[in-house]
Image 1: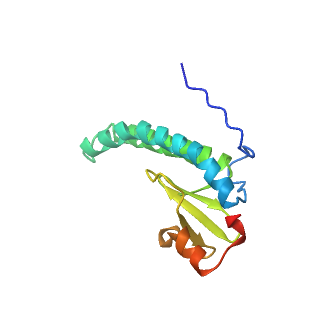
Image 2: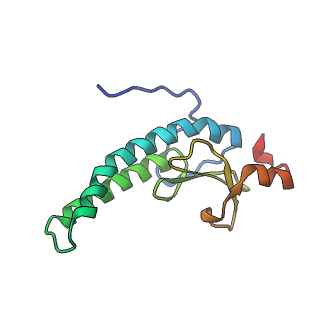
Length: 140
């Protein structure tokens, strides 16, 4: 029987691509759900990745396994986007703060990174470093 989880602090579940603006506390409250959704998808993708690594490029089953891979990833992206978040890469999630983004990547256990509007997610900095320079509105 599937596990049923109730979340009191979820603001909304909307259509994919409808990004929500978060405060840092709201983003941190949403993180346990994001971790669960991502862990489940990563566990589902793991055997597919193993099959792909063992296959030759001429294997006639390759398109089917690649479609399985794409299906798992697209389903994960859809779930992340319906939560009002941004999927920046495989298992990489950003929470829009208005002034920039807090960023999380599986299997991190905390939401500890920030990147500003116009910057790339890969250029993220520790939130503590950002807060040393100025106290942004999204911290509260």
